[in-house]
Image 1 (cartoon, one colour):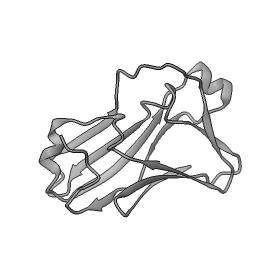
Image 2 (cartoon, rainbow, N blue to C red; image 1 turned 180 degrees about the horizontal axis):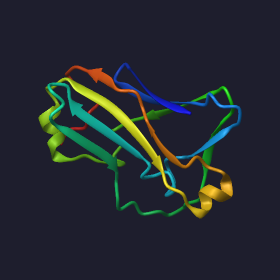
Image 3 (spheres, rainbow, N blue to C red; image 1 turned 180 degrees about the vertical axis):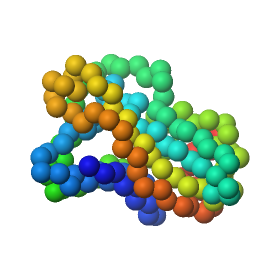
Image 4 (cartoon, helix red, strand yellow; image 1 turned 30 degrees about the horizontal axis):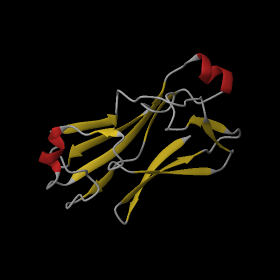
Length: 144
């Protein structure tokens, strides 16, 4: 399984590609099992000296929660739109220092083993996306 970032018209999509012979399951990102599994990694293109990680909010209050997942059949793709401006992300103040720089973007998915991942046969492990280079302006970055 691979994961690819697509960027067009100021929108990001995370594309999961299952090249295997069996379907694969990934936690949905709106429940506590999938909530903290994605990390954005923003790196200055100039000598790659500065990297900032953006993760989901740590103190999410769950009013309704259950271990839901999406399933990717063998040989298929599954597309998830991702938006840093949706207020679900902890945006570090250092993001302001990157707004006028060329950035290399990568997204990392890391799903830890749990009783629920074994019960529902959900993918466990780490996947890093491709890297994409984006030049300013970065209107997709939230204002801080």
